[in-house]
Length: 307
Image (cartoon, helix red, strand yellow):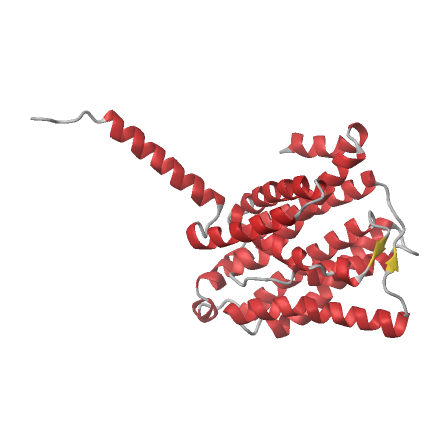
């Protein structure tokens, strides 16, 4: 693991700008998916609003970077996303199941419309210009955010706080009866999720030079973490990383070819297949295949009895 991190860290010195740009995208998918997993994988509250906090991070970062250093802007943008997430979590996390999923999806549209209204009626503009950072700076910042996100997911999973989140996932009413402050646990998880997604948005916006509502709050940003998390296996730490790397790499191949639409179609079919046949994701698929292989070998090794 340390070797991989070290190799990625020195990539800007030895790789082309195109490869570095791909690595930045994949790292952003890892961070978004792992952050989504902290909320949805650990508590069972399926969140379809990643673009809300990602977009907040992008806009906050774009504005702050005009008069604040890059890394400080990322940290401040993440803090703003955390505050907004905690405030919204107090309201949104009172609903459960499909209603929460629908409400979280609508959250992105609500925040996007607030920003759009502010731009068109107050700022009198359609977007925000961003001071551009070189790819090596953005990649190292994004690598740090991805590592912090993975570390946070690991620490939470192996803590008393994580145990409370998993108890909420299994049976929220029983968890509350057992003494878990479910409201506080959910709001804190929501806040951490928002903070990490906001940091991701702020970090990558410096590559673009310009941001508007349609890019910052794009629908695919909410959908990709769900698919990547489900594919890798929710509730684990390694699973979302695997899902983000696999799906993110495939997306970059199709997007780089100039025709991403087959990928979008394939992604929709993949999501349907995962939910229908392997809801626990890629690890479950591997375990199922390994069982079939073992059974096949054992069947062949048993001599037939005739007589």
